[in-house]
Length: 334
Image (cartoon, rainbow, N blue to C red; front, side, top):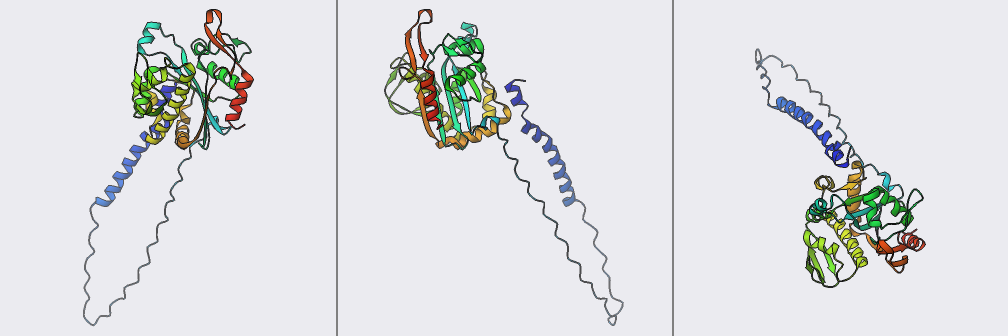
């Protein structure tokens, strides 16, 4: 069963469907007891003569108070397996596809946005690691090497393999992956009412112009902000991806957006998150609203052994895995 099908089969909705008729029946019975015909009035008994000694009226026994029904404790949210190590770590992939490109390219796509988000279970610390899309020569789970660029791996091997490759590269466990396209990115931004970011300098390209300073970006401007690299570089773009993700998380928490209905509306969504964990993860997002944020883009020269033109592959960067793992461990507090 697919993720979206499981959403449609939401167990809480099933419980509500069963409970509603029961409540209606109970309410109807209670209403009948209150509004039914009143009991007949007792006959008035007169004494035979004024000299007759009246029979003393017995003192009625006190009515026993009913034992109050204890209020049931709320069912605790089950703890997802993803929190077994005290944190939730998710690979977020943004594909360069949309409805127009999908038709033109026959379904081909590249994941130009590649960011790992890790938050502690108490919501106090949040770390983000972005890998440039041109990174190549990456170790595979089967012991081989992906010689192509990382942004093509999800299309050829699937997002789950990309998750495992990123796990090997960073030296940490990654619990889940989430992937959406550009159309659905705009839908997410719309669902939270836009995002507020601080823009460091003027960004101008053929799609839009975004002024420096504090900006409230609508869905179209947010996508342009995420894609821009004309003024600066892919590495600066990776930093903007991180900035947008942090602000989206905060908007989700402050506006209390429900994840399940939103997920049902995203046509491109691909994830391995169990539906049963969504409530716990929503709670975690709210706890992390004011988290201490640490983030790094794994860019050259600090995190590569080579960056440049490499034959038919064009521009690539080869990762310095020990340097990357040391930084990741430091930011995660290990």
